[in-house]
Length: 277
Image (tube, rainbow, N blue to C red):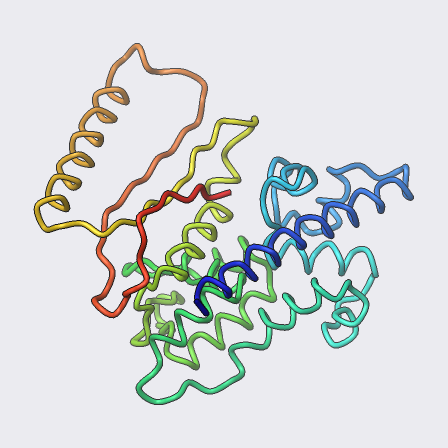
């Protein structure tokens, strides 16, 4: 029951975020006729692309933490968090403060992985960076800064201090640390949204071109094996399509798919399909 309540509250918060942000940006554009969406993007440091911001304006997806902070820092001409966070609407303030401060609480011994799950579920910036740095071959700090801005390095340093990430000074890359997610249901949902924010939403150019969904199910071993065969067959058909000379065109497309199982202590899984926006 508590999990269902938390999930409902999270959805309500995301809906409110979409409403407030879209209204504030549109009001700012209306009161400053000389500004366009493109010019606002430049003032925001291009932390988000135009197609994503327009979907934010149409309340199609939830603005990321870096988008929220960049817009309100531009709107109020204030870069100091301790001042900026007191200027923004209360809901925005709550999200920003949670995102920038949640890592300051020390990890409790023996409960690190569950805390990582909690941070992924409740801290948008953390989940975006966690998804972006999940590769064993490492992620360059320069690439992270280019993608998320200079302030992201503060969060990266906090993730390193908490052993969520490790840092190699020779390669100047961060790698997955010893404290990793158990991939609870909420964490998986948040990471799927973070991945779409980081990658998917930057590629789609028109409404309806992006398809994102995540499925949950309780399956028998036999059914899981069948599911894997279905995914393998889908992959084979995709390769046939990609390698067909008649498929070559102007559209820049990507697709990814994976199948994994939850750890045994995830006992709240129900059969459902959730679209990721």
